[in-house]
Length: 218
Image (cartoon, rainbow, N blue to C red; front, side, top):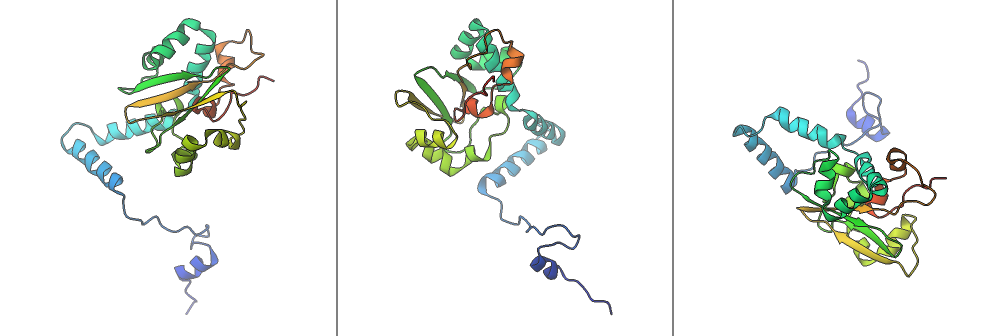
């Protein structure tokens, strides 16, 4: 009889029967929140409030959002003083003005200045302005970031490559379930006369969270 290769042989060799690197199945039990999400989704479908297609479409739309949306908002604020005023007074409506609907959430724009630097966190989970910045990075959701940025923001900033003068005030803003923040970073020097589209290329995701700075124009 031909020799039979068992899955265990591939497990120990680090390869699957198909020749691909072995990876264990994700067979861990569902968390409480995962179970609740499934139950709520199935109930909404059963009651005819939503269809599976509508849910899938909403997920696709959320996944398609990216930091370029927020960068466009920041760049317009840099070039349009009236829009900047509206953004700082009511970031929700200002974002809708540009076609970015953030839903019922309250969005607050906080401006970095020569003497104040702002950072965003969600200490309880991972509340994040996804409509403007897309999905949050893994480090934003980590327990280490959520706890350390509140206690030692300057040290966390330094680890991201941002070193500020001691005279600069660092403010940490904690997002909530119904309130989100976006940082309006300082416009880089040497960009006089630049249009909004060109400026938007300098705006980074991390600069809108507060752990980074815009790209240098040179």
